[in-house]
Amino acid sequence: MKFSPGIGVGAMSGSQGGTTASRGRAGQYFRTRTMPTQPNTAKQTTVRTNLATASNAWGATLTDAERIAWNDFATAFPITDRLGQVLQLTGQQAFVRLNSRLLNAGESIITTAPTDQDVTDVTSITPTVTVTGPVMSLAFDPSPLASTDLLIIRATPAFSAGKSYFTNALRDIQITAAAAATPIDVAASWVTAFGAFPAAGT
Image (tube, rainbow, N blue to C red; front, side):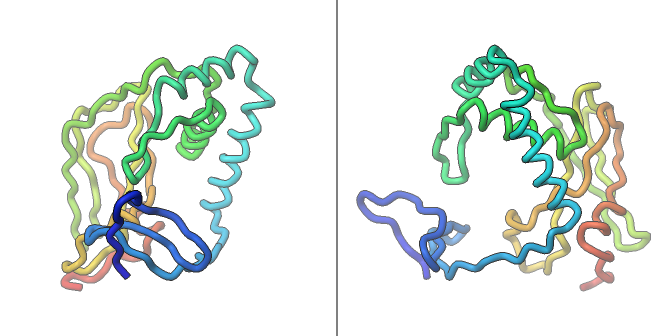
């Protein structure tokens, strides 16, 4: 069921009881809340472990001065959620959010709060995909990456030509090493995540 917010009600997101409010390309809508299954894959277990490790490090590893620095970082760099609302994280939330992602990428926890959020822009990405082989690679620029930079590559399973909305199906499938050079072969990672390539014409 679609829904148009009125006076005093902005965009809605989340669940209440058996109903979930969401928003897609066609606008705001309500749907029956579904409870996802928990297959407890190795990747899910790793992500949960990394989240717990980062959360524990806030109290067990950081000094008081480092926690103050993370509080200052969180104040200086609020985040924007999917509804476009600006959210002010606590220092602990910012620390766990950043470091759990680093752990998921195979990096180590950082205890010193960043002073900025600057990253090196990837100015172009050119995918090459064929079902023969199969071949799936990404050429990018600038190459190689900086010695402190890596790429997190996200992809979706194969969809029919008529499907144009796929954001909710994106999954992290591969993380490059720092200073990686173009092109990057991601075929094996895609197959591991989604299964065999579809046959040509399907």
